[in-house]
Length: 231
Image: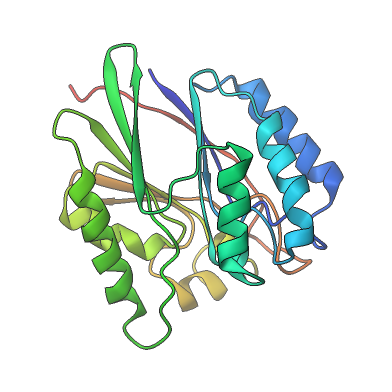
């Protein structure tokens, strides 16, 4: 019965209006979720947008906890400055770190993956290596949730039998002819919605904002999840 609101890819900046973002905060607060999890790309690129992004996150009112990770767009202008300012904001910010929240007697562990700053043909292997290192922080008595901006982290998470991974990054493909044709499947193995491998599940959010001022068959979204005990 634990509820989660996933907010991803806000892209605060020139392509996402303040009106849309304020409506997003209102909608998330209306869900009254136990937890709010932000899976990266808080800003579009400019650090001049970061104060607005931080204020929007602070305006979100989860019942029991909120956590934030970084995405690639957060690091375009100055990675270390972005990370420093978010840390100083007091928002719970997981950079290859984990945190445990005890909810109604159930320990939930959030494992927040940093953006893998590797360029080249083996980017996915670098993501997998980063996931494996992060999962060493796992606590055996806790229910783990991996927060990973890039959905390809799911391969390593599923290999480790992590029950739930939350990702964004893809914008649902941004420009799609239909559910199977477009930039999503052309670029990513997982680009929108729910994926299952064994007992592991991945949710890829289409995200809230935009890095390009047009979406086609890839609507912006918020994700609302309810956890159920396995029978």
